[in-house]
Amino acid sequence: MAIRNEIDEFVVECDLCGITQSHEKDITAGYGEDNGFTDMIESIKEEGMEPGIWTSVSIYNDEFPKHQAHCLVKDDKGVPILGDWIKYLIDCTPETLARHVTPTYAGLAELGYRYFKTDVTRHLLFDGFHKAVADGSMTNEESEAKHRAYLVAAREAIGDEPFWLLSWGV
Image (cartoon, rainbow, N blue to C red; front, side, top):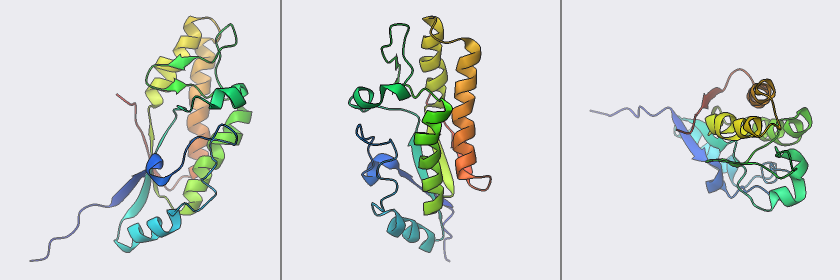
């Protein structure tokens, strides 16, 4: 009796693909390069599965704020805020989203990923933006709007068809 493979998706974590957050370039540096994505995606499809990728809203590169601090949430003294479990917080302005988030997700969708997991979205809002609210550098309404703007930018970039899982990171 043949056993059918019941796994429909194969998910790859970005860090395993040699993609890092560059401090000299956009966060998306490396996504435009192949880095083996094409062969990996084709191998996954050949096995009858849908390719998926695990991403995160986190910025852990300590060099990034030295070169792109204008893309980060800062406290009332102009120092980048560090969130619990998330480290540096992307400011989610239209300019930052257009430079970093939209091309990242659009590029991954163009490569053929059909399943997306975005990790630690809870921490962006509750452990990150709410620190800015607590110190008075952002209102609750701004916090909610920025969080929503990230989600909208990512969703619009991948389109309506791919499956998108938001992980609270709990």
